[in-house]
Picture (cartoon, rainbow, N blue to C red):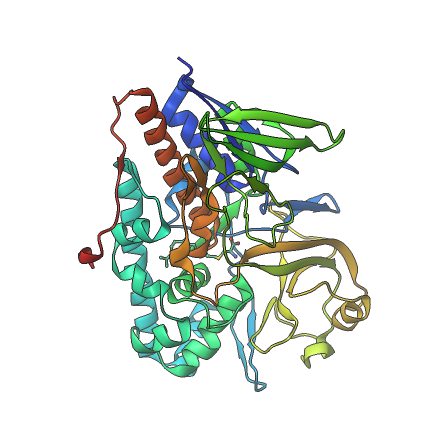
Length: 464
Ligand SMILES: CC(C)=CCC/C(C)=C/CC/C(C)=C/CSC[C@H](N)C(=O)O
């Protein structure tokens, strides 16, 4: 029986998994209008070059990411391992370079020499412990527990997480984890730079996710990660609207939301009313597709900004002399730990295994678009394949995670609130599951259907 018609705004990994969870939880009781201004997948995107496909957006999945692993298995998609044999170089602010080796044993020995055994051991132990505590979130969600805020969700998993949101990586890794300065300034900073384009001023939790992303067993989806949101949408059986939502007005007398959108091609206007709305796109002030919220007694606004990160895919050979390397000794990945406009440069492999590629493809992450002259200095004969100017992840320096609200207004939900804890595919799916549980609870409450009990929990400060 249809008891609700509901829109989801955005079909990235957050919006697509939210529609999948809603369909799974509410079966035929719900109709879903999925609004997407561009293409399914959002920040998961691929590009083709010389008949090969390359990732330009979110690319790595961790072995402990339960939801992404489950989706991959359910959809019978194959894993493609992250580059294991690559030579990685961390370029320091004062000219120091850490260089890994093709042999894992030699790399570990070099790391112990540079950073010290105890510091690396403590780092590993801390990340493993966090991953174990993080697993509690899956248990809570399996039990149907839903939370209104990011703070409540993480506190229920482990109240200590709140401490990690409130301290910078620089201070936290020194005072809680007792790492030496070099490990934090070089190694931890490098992971943050390559994953989030930021510094050790970000909060400790985010930097731990970033470190986990560098040291765990990592993989991507063979053929491209964007197949996951595409299949999630397909399995959710939605009414797909290739429209950009421009306005959400609250109709107080009817307790409804009036969603106004424009179609991509014909710029036709569509106006529809709903009792529950899910937003799965960033709605910070810097959003490229802003939504106007009208008739709300308290303004709907989300503080903070996203970090601009430009991904440039270039085919060609890196110029050894650019970073003063010998031509036979050019690394596969370079992380610039100084304040260079280029965060990192990495040789990337196609998402379907091939024996050999004709031309190597490199992915450069920078803080602004690179000029032709800069690319010509870096590469012998650069051929630009793709430039993606992303608002990729939040700027984390301000430590404002705890402002994250999944509930923007009565029955108006926001998946992306979770990104202030950390931005990664798995995090978006966790945010989506939480919102799907909140929606289920709301629908059951409003219709008096209470067969499945979905709990909503608020974190009590005394639990700390
Ligand atoms: C509590 C900890 C340490 C981790 C939580 C589990 C988790 C979300 C792991 C993700 C690790 C990962 C893939 C990090 C990479 S950062 C995002 C990346 N740039 C991307 O999405 O491509």
